[in-house]
Structure formats: C-alpha cells, structure tokens
Length: 257
Image (tube, rainbow, N blue to C red; front, side, top):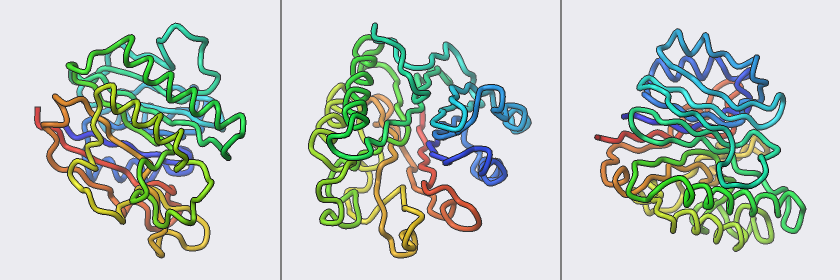
C-alpha cells in the first residue's frame, strides 16, 4: 500500500497540481492537510474520477483535513474520541483504509512560545496521545500522518541557532511529540534516513527552498507491525517546485502487507 501525507496549503489553490501528482504517483491512500475548504466545497467528484473515495473535515478558510482511499474507507471519525470536549478546529480525521487505521492530522502551529495557541498546541498533542490510548493498541496496524509543526531534533531544522526560542523546536513540544511515539509509533522516515539536511517544509520567504533552509515537520508514524514492512519512503521535493507550490512537499511511503 502506497500512502502519502501532504499539507497542500489550500486545496482550492493547488487542486490541478494535486490531481496531476496523484495520477503520476498513484498512491492508494492520501492524507491531506490545510484544505482550507468548507465541507460543501470539497472536490470529491474530482477525486472520484481518479478512483478515490474521500472523507473531509473542513472549516472554511482555515485548517481542514481529508483522507482519500482506493482501498476503502470505513468508520470515519472527525476529531478526538477521548471523552473530552469537541476540538474547535478541523484538525484530525480518522478512517480505516484497507484494514489500516489511518489519521490525517494538522497539529496547531503554536504561534510563539507562551502564547495561548502554544498551550492549545501542547494540549492538542496530549489529546492525540489520549485518543490513541483509549481507542487503539500498539499491536494494531495504525498510521498517524500529517503536519505536526514540530521538529523533533536539531537535525530537523536547517540551523538550530536560527530557531532559538521559537516554536516547533521548544522542549515541551518535542517532549509531547516523543510522548506520542512512546505510545507505540515509529518515525518511519527517520528509521531509514538518520542524516541531517532532509526536510519537508520550506518557507516561501527569502528563497528558503533554493537555499535549503528547511524543516522536517511532516511525518508518517506507524505502529511496529507496519513500520517493519515499510519499503520505499521519500520526500518529493519536485512537488515543491514550479508555479504556486505548497510550502510543504508530499511525504510518501510504501508498506508491503
């Protein structure tokens, strides 16, 4: 099964690029973040034409997550099932695709350390861990994909000094990310590539992409049963090039089940 995560930074603005990429790469499951569309505006017909079923959790001009699948969509759930209040934002959607429980997640940015949105981010990550504990076992086939807005290690940013005191690299964020891994998930890309200089996001400003001023903040996290079957895994930097790209590149992995 080929599965992809991609923060498209507005599906309306990128739809032709996304459709072309899907035709070329032919993934079975696609997790999309930042659709920035209301439910009624989601282009399900265009994805159906490519053979995908789809589920979308939208919020108009902000946030929004979706799952596309050629191997079925069962038991879709928006938000968290952890006994808490509904999340006010459209940031996570779950579905079972080909026997695998899949989550497409868009973790809050945090804005700046100490901001109320930073506290929301830490609470959100804790809720993700709680949802996993209450609804799943690490022995199951579970994949959590998406834009986490966390760089887990210094090697995941182009220059740690440039991020000193900023969000995405603060120790509480990194600890919250590690807590999710400790539940029973593995960072499939880092399992394969331990070296520095490998990123999934490049800011639009200051020519960051061409200067290689990037961050690795998009992940395919897998339980051990799936991580052990992960073959090809790559960041498609070519999708970050050209006219009107997203500031994120798609992250793709093949699982041989």
